[in-house]
Amino acid sequence: MQQQQPYFERVKSFADVPIHDDGIDAHAFLEASDGLVGMFDLLGSGVFGFVQSDIRNNIRDVRTHYHALERPKTVEVMLPGWGDPGRGALVRLVRGLAFTCVALQNMQAHPARDLYVCFKASYDSVLKHHHSFVIRSVVYVALRAVPHRKDFYARIAQGAPHDKLDEELRKWLAGLDTIVIRLKVFLKEGGFGVV
Image (cartoon, rainbow, N blue to C red; front, side):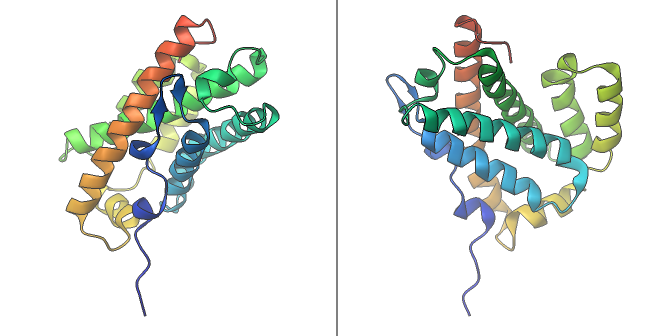
């Protein structure tokens, strides 16, 4: 019986999302974002429930707009003419992607650091200033349940060698970082919102 490929080999990588002259390929971007949400399912913990729920809802709203516009080619082409509630979904989606990207970059840059510290630092730099004191308190409690690094890697790798996971994750994060930076600038300069 053939073993199933590890999750990170089966889903669309942000490294494979095309960037055209007029922006980021919308279909591939949404597909890669779906893959990110699915990655959290592998952790088997409700710790990322708040992130998953927010990202999943924002993907749904962005995808609804994508289909309503007869499939525009790029994320950037979708924005003009899109009302504030819809734009807000894209801004929040990019925030969730940025949070995840920074946390996983911290994890790779600091292999001896507890994952809780990596995710807390990411939350503090990316999302904290968007939340009230009550929400911040809930998030800090939830972040305490982040799995240990060894468990996290085992669940994400699904039997693949950890060095292969690191290599694929590095590419995935480089692609995600490029997309997040590009969208942050586009959203801010276009007056669509601040990530």
